[in-house]
Length: 119
Image (cartoon, rainbow, N blue to C red; front, top):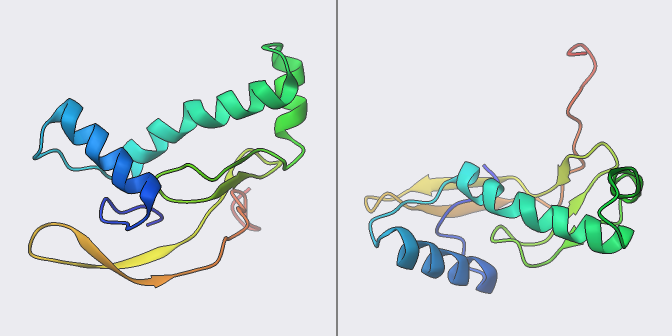
């Protein structure tokens, strides 16, 4: 996975705190929840880069590979021209409290949503 609730970075600590204040202390945050939170922030960054809400302009800047966020709960992410994210892969060891300890973290990985043989 690329996101675990237990990630120890300032962005995630604040995100988890705010999420639990809103949805309850026993709420568990997974990769899909973090991605749903991240999507509007990527949209905002693209709109700001385009200087417009015009869809054609937003699509154009989103294809430049220059949309980046360093405030994501998972850490730094960058939008690839194929509209998928460069992000890290993490391997976690699950603990009795339901959280994961990260035992491996890759560098940013270039997204390839359509690898040969899967087109």
